[in-house]
Image 1: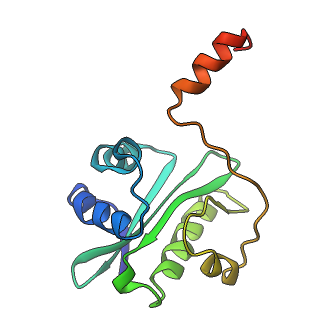
Image 2: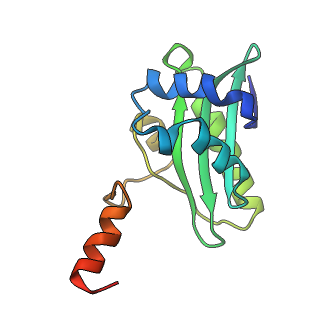
Length: 145
């Protein structure tokens, strides 16, 4: 197994990984164009797990100088329970620590047991506004922007 940085050729195989785990909700958030934007973002880490030359997992997150947050972890079902998810989390944690992070949060959809085994504790409730325009229009409507 190889953990490495994302490259544009990973887009389609990683979309398949996300779809296999029912984590491909919106192409504009999870699709190839979004992946390319994330890979160009200086605050982001976007890592890929590769087996036999093929992308089989991914992890994405950001460090804003204060908080390190992982937004996506996904390993193709045919490759789960082989330590790939653990290796992805470990590598992104090392990278964030090198940038100055002293803690790591995960927005988790999927295998909470893996995260619990790695020392994560459930602490908050996540609320999502999609599309973001709904927040802007609602705040403008109430005059509280």
